[in-house]
Image 1 (spheres, rainbow, N blue to C red):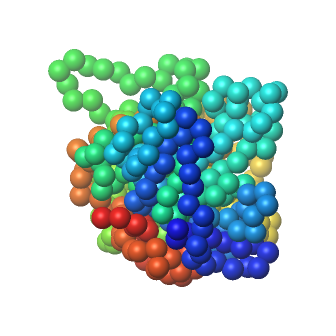
Image 2 (image 1 turned 30 degrees about the vertical axis):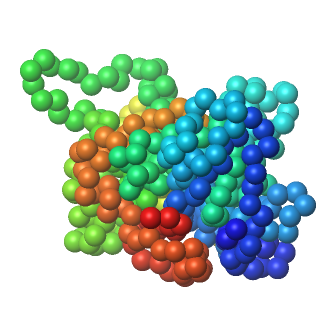
Image 3 (image 1 turned 135 degrees about the vertical axis):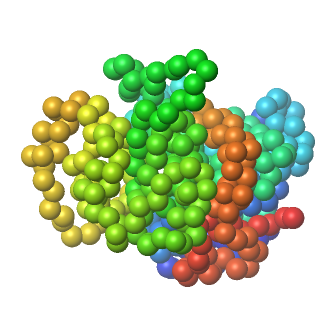
Length: 371
């Protein structure tokens, strides 16, 4: 079957003929892959910055944002039915009995680092025609979400982060006041750094959760991203026309910063303006560049005196996938055109090079294998 793979030792990226998988255990499901989203991780793997083939293989089939259709079901499968649309999870648990996280089904918090990730680390991904996996890693999708379901996996980044925010903020009185019969104003303010797919999906999640949300990105408005941001009720601010300090004055006390750029210098500059009792979330992974100058005294002083929290988040567990599926449905109901416009284009697998190795325009590009 067709697949797109990277050969790290040879520094090659190419379409290959990959062996078709077969069901070997009663709890496995075979998927016909329909769509695979292309993200920055895929591009970085294709640039050989990281990415590890399975043991004994010279290549790694890439792709971790996906949508498939169940075409074969193992005898003991109960969560998935024939014909179901399915979004598979990415991370697989480590084998160590001492890892409480993995043994509890929370491999996204693996303690040992000996996990595998489909299409990234030690296990083939989804940019291929067929995939077999255990049903416990599969999430059925309502048929009415078919056209936007490939966005579920990138949305899980925001869902996992926001779930942790709600848990952390139980440390203080943080709920918004409710006045019966009166429309509720925003009582929390959030800044999203970056207007890529992860940032825009995060901004949608924050608006839907009741945050007055500002998206801080480079391009001057008007542009397609600024129009999209405003279409779902957030404010767009360009770094070319407003400094971070000016953004902070405009926003007021910033309760939450959701970083989605991988730009460390910008992020630490923004951290200086995080508000009282605020939370700063890192989702980006910067490449190793030259050292940057950081005002550590001010950042540490604010962390202590303003009761601030900083955390990073990566990958997601089943709970985040389930909430992401729910919220994709909410977004499609509230902002159908905005949600669909996140997907800039769909191309056939044979056009993989322009998406992985070129400068494909737009927000989210998708490889499609079926109508």
